[in-house]
Image 1: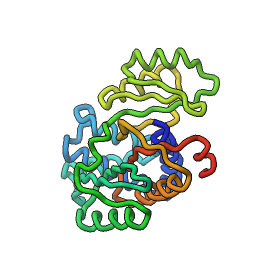
Image 2 (image 1 turned 30 degrees about the horizontal axis):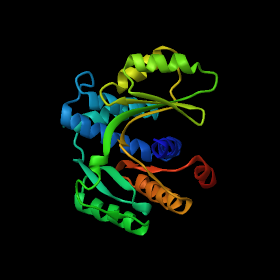
Image 3 (image 1 turned 60 degrees about the vertical axis):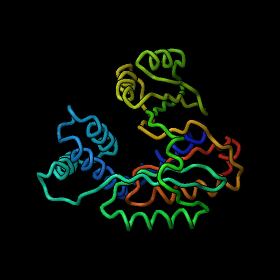
Image 4 (image 1 turned 45 degrees about the vertical axis):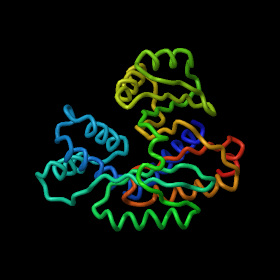
Length: 248
């Protein structure tokens, strides 16, 4: 989980910067549009839409922008049609990389994603080549300063969490995708401030990488995240704390 934990934290900080540029809002609007298109415009009956709206609110997206995105998804407003595509490949050191995309032009996006892999020491692979390594999980992190670890762990596990760990002073909680919202809400109701939360693709195994490969992997992941169509990128790399300090 170390590589996933580091990358989740980096993505969280990066998202804050993206929000200032409006890029994050654009990505979240796409997520809302697709969720509404696939499951309807009622967040009470559409879990994917509810999650997308929560992410948009956390990013301070205006209410009217959220509502417009929902209406575009349901067809009440004219808009571009997006489709979900999963790209799989390998990064430096042979690590598995999975990239979740929402695009209005599959051919254009495929070429651009392939180029990012090629220019950053990776290679785009065939469908199914690495997806088996990953499973969808909820991930929640809380700053541990001044918090009662035993109380937090007990609360999280009772609410349905699968795992609880401590990394660099952060409490990290893993759930299955279905229990994610319940666990998160239980922590919020108990007065705990969530530092970062997301439903992500978590690897079943990880590969330890050296400093050289770690630097290349981080560059590849950042380039993928910078692409407008990419909703999330995931890898099974494990970067030690010592190497991570050198990279930051």
